[in-house]
Length: 108
Image (cartoon, rainbow, N blue to C red; front, side, top):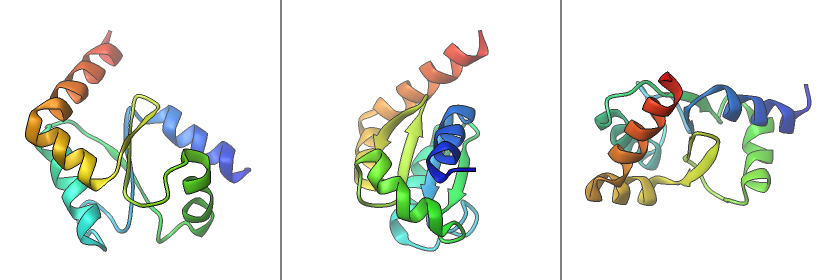
């Protein structure tokens, strides 16, 4: 499968998705760890892709997303941002509202 099609499928198939270094249980960088922690506070399941295990995605996703760094958090098919944006959104309550609204929308 073409790598861009693979990325698009992952984003489409997962309501909340984080492209990160490592896994949620064992992040390989502090930024990924902070983003996972912020998402975890919201209390909903999320999918992840370990970009260290997928060189093709690590290479192509920054071009596709027009976002150069990892982690990348995608919610409902949209790039929300990286670590600092996600943490800021958590602190203002915006992340929890976005996650809750998105989950409710998909449960209908």
